Image 1 (tube, helix red, strand yellow):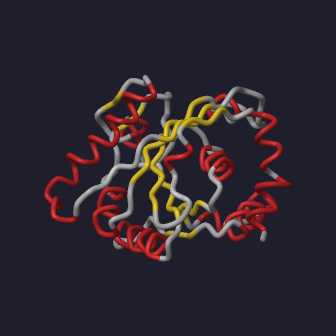
Image 2 (cartoon, helix red, strand yellow; image 1 turned 135 degrees about the horizontal axis):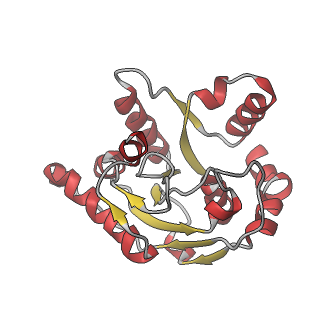
Length: 218
């Protein structure tokens, strides 16, 4: 109930007013069954806009800190995460990677939509960075189709240099579903690179062949 209340009453109308989202290719998202939505990552509100425009609930794996942080902002994050059914994942332990993939597989095996940003973190400069292979590994394991999604304008609505949201045009483009065969486990890296190349081609943004976290650390 909270998911739909936040989407249609409490948060969604504000996002629509600020971003006036222009949507392309939404028909590629099936009406039922497991599906993976893989999008580039420009801003914190990316996941909110994806939940806003997709007719079905979209579940993301959220870092554990969103569920445990203190203060009013921490309580607000915890409420939103729990209310919308997002799944907490501990990214610090030695099994963090496998635990995340197991959680994602459960979402898909229950017939849900798993949303993921393959870059792993927000782009520091708007370019598209090397993708993590988890999205392809889960797609091969579950047989779920992967729908590449290009977001633009969310970084202007939710700039990392500004404290508050501001109006800016948001565009969201859904591509054709891509399928990955379990037998091609040796081609996980290649398939991930092809997925990122799809995002690069459709977005017109430059590609950086290193992880965004590595670039920011450097």
